[in-house]
Every structure is written in structure tokens, then in C-alpha cells.
Length: 137
Image (cartoon, rainbow, N blue to C red):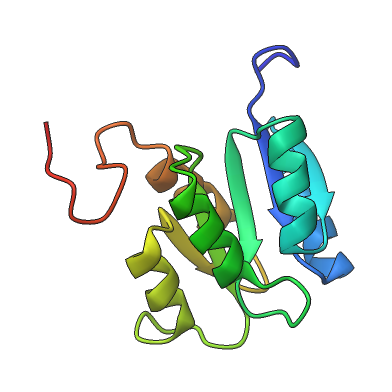
């Protein structure tokens, strides 16, 4: 992937260690990476230079990932969003709620390379409906 065609990824997490690990995984896979520590920073970054994919922590106190997902839904953005959580790793918990709100994929923290790459593949699958409940075709 050339720098001109590389997909840009925005990582939204207040934990610098998670940002660094996830950034390293994504750069190794050929992505360009930007980091912000909270939802307001993410909204500003999206307005300035919209990424191709967003990874957002949904449980950190300052990150407010569910608020970001709600903003993302209200603005009808087609940017695939991948929700992350280290606190509740079940699909019946907050990751499940993020998926119901429209997150294209979810991963548990700490991020593992295989999980990250599978989440991206799922999130950018062109055949998938853009919003939950949307019909195929």
C-alpha cells in the first residue's frame, strides 16, 4: 500500500499504551494512523481530515466512546467505526450496545494483531449494510 493510497485510521483512546500498541499493529499493516484521547478530539479530527476507519474506546472516562458513536450516527457518516473495550468483553455488555448502535466491529483490549485485522476486514466489507436493520441490495 503506497502512502498515497494508504487508508487513514483514527484511534480514539485515553490510554497511551493502547494507542501505541494499536498504532504499531496498524502501521505494520500499511495504514496511516492519527491519535486522539477523547470524543471531542475525534470529532475535530473527523471534521479536519476524515479518516477511513475509526477505532474508539467505549469505556474510558474521558473518551466517551458511546457519545462518539451517537454523534457518528446522527451525522450519517459512512466511516466504519470499530468499538473497543477492556472492561466488558461480552456482546451482551457495552460492546454489544456499541454493535447495536452501529459499530461495524468490536474488539477487546488489549488489542491483538489478528483481532484488529479481522475487525478491519469486517468493518470495510462493502457488502454489509451501512446501518443495523438496513436491507441488503
